[in-house]
Image (cartoon, rainbow, N blue to C red):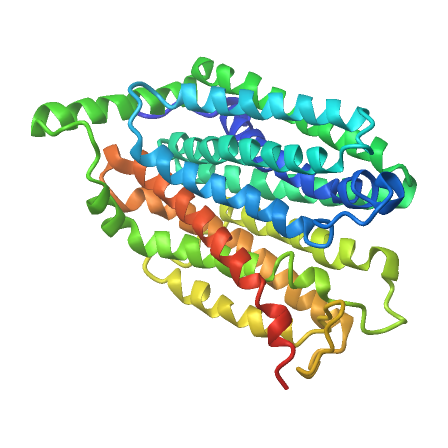
Length: 414
């Protein structure tokens, strides 16, 4: 039976919105970093130097990635009868509650209780990213039943979210000095996107195109159970072995990306005074906006170009490892550290070329790997393979972040 058309691309747009929603909460927390470090926990607000302030970003990152990683893997192996709907709805609901509470805390005077504010922020991040890990993992599981371009739509949405956050940050930095007001608007925007995700998810079963693939998947599962009399639990080891090449590709793409972005790239300083981007917004434009914009373009390309194939995808994925030394040889500086490693790339345009190609290959190759992963196993196990691929994605992110901590030591070599 031939599949109906995705009328007005509604199914595609729905998963694109969910791709935006998956990363919007975290992106808005990062965008509002000045609200935490320069307002709520600043010496001028609380009256003394807060001990955790110098490494606030490290604490925030650690509290975000550990629970997301753990919950993402648990979401695969913890069997809950029925569809993934309950996990998605509950996880979105939890994140919405966290953001409502965060907006409430932004309006309170917490200058007399900085320790409480710091630890409740970390707890909110843990809860938010735990729910987000389940949400992301489940969305990739659901979209696996559709053609590969719909998985690419989720990745594209992820990168649109980052681009939007970068633009919002840049505009607010140039237009308003009020960090508290800017942060409240960031959180409200994230809340609006989450509510939109909540609403569009319930509209999916009403979509004829989505319903066709959903019913087809259920038929395949029933045929597999009745013909082979197999147990309900998927053969995880078999699925992992069959999908391993693509799981490794997903892992390595995100490992390289997060090893250099944002920790290493955010430390790269302007080389030429004549470069058209001012010092004030250099990191915002050359690091955050450049990465998110070109990663978005890269994740959009698989809609029209799918190359290389599954068997040769590992080649450009492995070649991307070269980006780590390339960025280290740019004008990377760390406060309080005297660089000994020579700076080989002293041209800002060369740095832009390195940064933009790293981003576009990140978006493109990650989309291909996530698209290929479900197709490496039997059709009835495609959902599980996609969820394992999503967990591999988070594992690559986590290890990349861990490796990013050694770069300040690397520039002492020379």
